[in-house]
Image 1: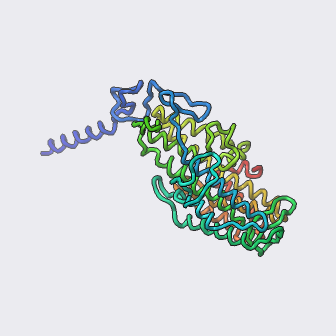
Image 2: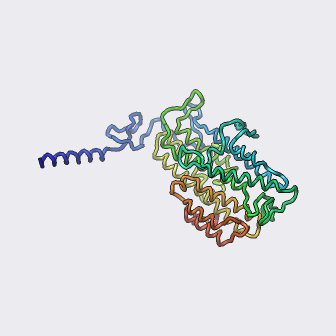
Image 3: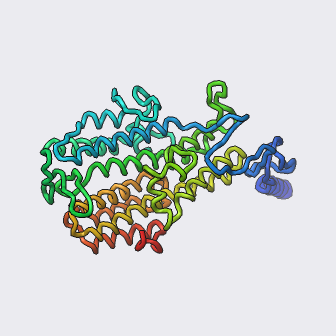
Length: 408
């Protein structure tokens, strides 16, 4: 009986050892490096139709483009029109409608100028239902949506109180704050908050960055990369290719970035920090390299480039927040300019919460972000240089920007 039990244990151990030592390699017999000995696929397969990384974000299949992100182009243009409308209230006497702002946000029976003829009016695309996903394939956060709706109310309510040619906004008085010799005029609350900046930069983060990092790239591993969706209907791409393209479309609408596409949103702000942190080049190259990896079914490279995009978008937002906090120190006695840049800094800092790194506890945490926001305070008129420096130091330490924080 003792011998039998010993034999069974020995055979079990050998079976376990055999299973744990299965050779890894390429198990796809259509790949040029297919291994008959490999029992476990390690995502290393190379195919004879492998392509090189292109100079621009251009990919073709059978001579036809396989890139499509029209929905993202629409949403970028929607935010552009929304921002332009909000900024009309910077002229004293011009009132904007909260109902119109909310209709633009939700694309609810709104008639767009649609300068690029994208078919925005009546489209199913909108900004509201893409706001602040917590996980890939999730849904919008209603609490965050409500925050933007409140910003729209603030802009409309303040603008309704202004009088033509009267720029009387100041500390504790909402209205159009006059040019102080450096910047202005801007519509701001008596606390110095410029809600237009909260909306523009906030939606850049809560929609565009969130959709890039959390929704599309966060769920890219679950997308099919075998079946062409429908080439006869112009969908000449796999689901995985398309999801990657849609992420790219939230970064910039221009495939030849940065020759074009540096005039708004993430294309603009990443390029604005390029000399110091190089994020614009890193992000663009990562999008091209990752898309190439998907075509070549090189998922190790794809995933490495996902990490680059997540990290660099966080650095752009954090670096831009630091840039505006440094500007606030320079404008500490210029009330309009100081509060304008503090509004931009606050929006980018709050926006960091909606990136993959913060949500997944891989970067600056929500607790650290709230601590930095606490240094700025709720009344921009009384901020101190020492508190601005404390916020800058915290952001820089948390995002790896200590060496450049003084130059940003």
